[in-house]
Image 1 (cartoon, helix red, strand yellow):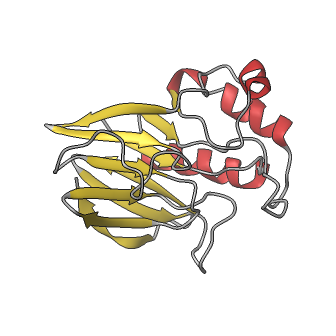
Image 2: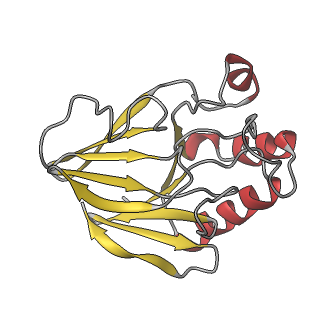
Image 3: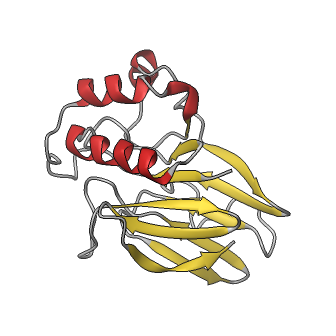
Length: 181
C-alpha cells in the first residue's frame, strides 16, 4: 500500500490543497497526518492562506482515507469538527517485518523514545525539519512541514511505498535521498 505522509498543515488552506493534489498525483491509498492540522500555534506565524474551516472541509471530504495522530496544537474541539480520529497520541504501522511508531513528536521523539527495538522506525513531525537517518539502530523519519518548514527547507510531504521512504516538495522533486525502512 502506498502512503502519503504529512505533518504540520497548521490550518493553511493553500498547502492543504497542494497536499491533496500531491495525494492524487502520487496515487496513494491512504494519507497519514502526523498532527497540527488546524491551528497555527502560538510560536508560529500565520501560514499562507490560514483558513482552518476550509482545511476542515477539504480533509473531511477524504475522511475515510486519513489516519491521524494528535499534535501539540490539537484539542477536543478539533475532533468535534473533523470526521476522522485525530486525538490518538500514536499509531503503529507495519512495513513487512518493521514496526513504524508514528506520532507527532512533541512527547515521543529521538530524545524520549517510546518502546522500540533496534530496526524499528520512529516517524514523527513537530520539528518542521525533514529527516531520514538512523540513530542507535532506530530509523528516524520526519516528512518536514507542509505549511511552515524550518531551517531553510521547502514545504514537503513524504511517500512510503514498498519499504522506501521519499521526502518530496510540491513540485514532485525528491529533496532527500530515498531511505529504506
